[in-house]
Image (cartoon, rainbow, N blue to C red; front, side, top):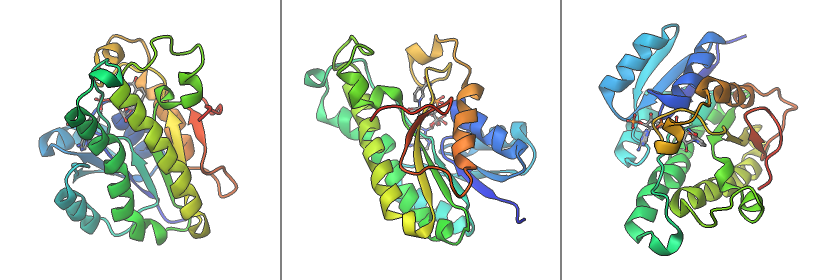
Length: 235
Ligand code: NAP
């Protein structure tokens, strides 16, 4: 079987780096997406195996085009790059903040997906994994899980929008055999925000869920929102 090729955006640190590490270990060629060349090179040096740097800022159309030109074959795309927002309800969030967060968390994955679709369509087993968040679940938002109603409005609503795109892409690409799923990684110790940084959650554990979706068999699900442990998350 031909060696599979993956791209993980925002893979120089955090959950993305752990996803890249596990995909390299599984024997894939892995493009380590990073918006900063030096941080990308550092991660590649640490990851070893067939990890390769790919300069990619998901908010920059020219950067996306250049990255897509550099990669002509792709089996797995992990839209992992993301940013957080302040812990504010929507009435206190200005439009610029909504725009900034949506640029990275919503428009970024859509633009990157569209740019790499020609390469993905050439794969016999293409998979797209969108790294979402349980905080984007509307079902959980109206339940007891999130007692601080409306908090982190820009970030959480951006992940809700990413979930919607996951469903729409899964439907649009089903005839191409491309499976598209969203992952809720759980709270993990990363640079995302102060709450994440202070948590005990191991980002490598979250990465196992992303890798499972990246390497789904042909009879695996598509258009699903799954937790890192494989259980369903309500939309
Ligand atoms: P992180 O450590 O801050 O990593 C985020 C990654 O995204 C970094 O590599 C960052 O690059 C990159 N990035 C940000 N903006 C970018 C852009 N415009 N272009 C390209 N790369 C960009 O956070 P993380 O927790 O690993 O986050 C990974 C994903 O998991 C995100 O989508 C996040 O929303 C999601 N998530 C995380 C948690 C958690 O508890 N950690 C929970 C739920 C969901 P720089 O290093 O250059 O900033």
